[in-house]
Image (cartoon, rainbow, N blue to C red):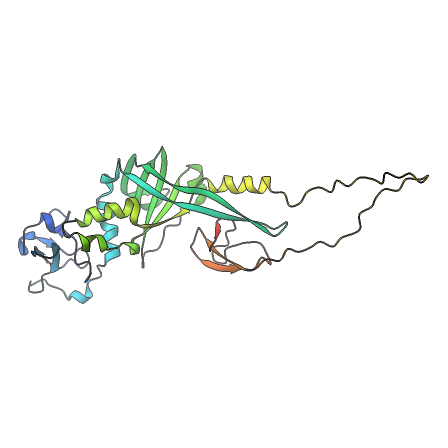
Length: 296
């Protein structure tokens, strides 16, 4: 937390998140560190940002180097705190493209599931149990649920049954808390951490679709509409020599279309691999063949 400093504390009595702008100076803040639960000081310098710091002289002080609190954890905690403020705000969702490999001819088809959009959030809840999983955020946009998984180093992503998501027309969006940038906080010392986190959730944070309910129908349609070749419409010989001689096409060997290896990424688990098209496209980790996209 050396670069970001400690952007908020936990009040000893209420257990609520307190930002330094709302806390009295020094020990009067009555706050604990969100990571190690050690006492904090609220600092209000004239030229730098307001922030908290470990109270090294307190009788309950702990070694600062043992504190597990970091920027990504701070962002994730604040995202849950400001969830109610997301209602009525505009959420930007990312582009989603998937590749359908046609084993019959060796061709691949790039399909656009979502071109990315900006939609108003109708409902927002934090730390909700959905489909037997604890979800960081549950949003409702245009009548459809979007589950938001806050991911960062050391936190395992949630794995929800795709059938349940599909049946409920629910999408799963990952938001990478490690992608949070403190540049805006450096530029504006009066910008609250909670305000920066709101902007991070709505538009600035790195996000990706872990599951989109439109993917399956789009892939099904691509398989249904796919045509490898056009039918041979050559007719019979027009000459008459006293007997019937149909034109018989020469026997041709099936040609294999050779493609250069291409790098793919599994949309489900995120693993990347190089595919040489010698066999069907399938993720080497989760064995899914439905959700892979070609990387440039």
